[in-house]
Length: 191
Length: 191
DNA sequence: GCAATAAACTTGACAATGTAAAGATAGACG
DNA sequence: CGTCTATCTTTACATTGTCAAGTTTATTGC
Figure 1 (tube, chains in turn purple, red, orange, green):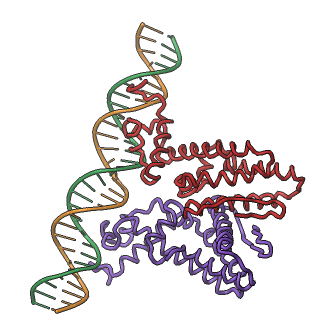
Figure 2 (cartoon, rainbow over the protein chains, first blue to last red; figure 1 turned 60 degrees about the vertical axis):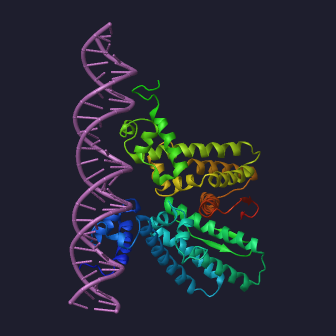
Figure 3 (cartoon, helix red, strand yellow; figure 1 turned 180 degrees about the horizontal axis):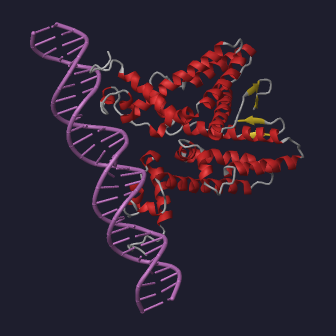
């Protein structure tokens, strides 16, 4: 299918090229025309698959999020208890974004996640990583036989998320090395 | 000085116009030419005061950070103890960015703070809000007569910062209403 | 006071970019 | 085979950051 008029799988190729460019030279330098050139198609070819630059970026975000989710789920899968799983998630969160800080800015900077959520129907209501944390947390409560009101649960979830996300933010911003640990007995968050 | 060839105080006018545009239509739509037009000068006039668009943006960031610092310090000034001051900082942090979420993305999204720090010699080493927190925290340790190693102190500071920053991030991203509270006895972070 | 110099601003130009419109190509399907 | 439709190209245009050269005003040295 090489050198043919039709690319074959241009849509995915554009997404991959976009990721490559972001990794190599950052999001600012990502242009539709460069992405098209990278795929050896004309500069307007992407418009057959995306209605705007923004749509391509959304697709790339989804792709990166998928990759992130794979790592999170792989880490969780190795855990025997929900408690361990939550700790593993925190570690994966930090290592994933420490390894490629550009992704952090790309996913959470600029446009907010909410906009991304609304454009992507696959995410029902929650951002997938957050949904996973929610499941693990509920499982954790079950395992420990802890009863909490809905509000208390939401607060705990936000607490965990804020802590990990905030630490990832610091790690990406300042290059600080951070690790994560959570001891349940008194709901304590430790670095 | 109106209608004269020389504007009089174009530099500040450009910064103010930039802030206005960001507030009205977001950072993406901020262009040098629009800023110049807003000030009724030609499109290249900004280059008499800034070497690039990036430099103007850095100046705007400094301006917004100054405003943020004023609010933080105003809140701190009303507190009798360092402990209260730290709590007040957390509240100000959240209310400031809840009130104008665009500033959060503008300050912390995209380019990281580190780049901003390096460009701005006024910030010696620490980001001013972080430096303020550091001072209050040290004062807090004195007040309570607590002795901690340097490493422990750094960890505590990152913990506090991550928590508050992470919550602000959630608030800005998802419009979640959040409040902040920190009880010292067991270094507990509560939403 | 006045000439020289520097600072602030304008004009014109250029390349890169997002996007739209119109046409070309090729595979799918009757 | 002929038509259709999705895919891709070409051309065109407006917006943008930036530069170079010129113009205007303020400042400084004499």
